[in-house]
Length: 63
Image (cartoon, rainbow, N blue to C red):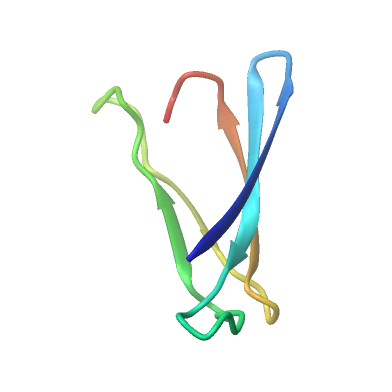
């Protein structure tokens, strides 16, 4: 399960949230991967912290 928040700053988008398991417990050290629409661009990724929180700064329109 994901909790996602996005904010727009000019041409950047912040994607953040908390990864939780089926019992709503935070999942530390989980991988979060964003695959861009344009296959020539690189994947973006983050690893959750001890409380399951992650934050990614993406180019607008990449995901």
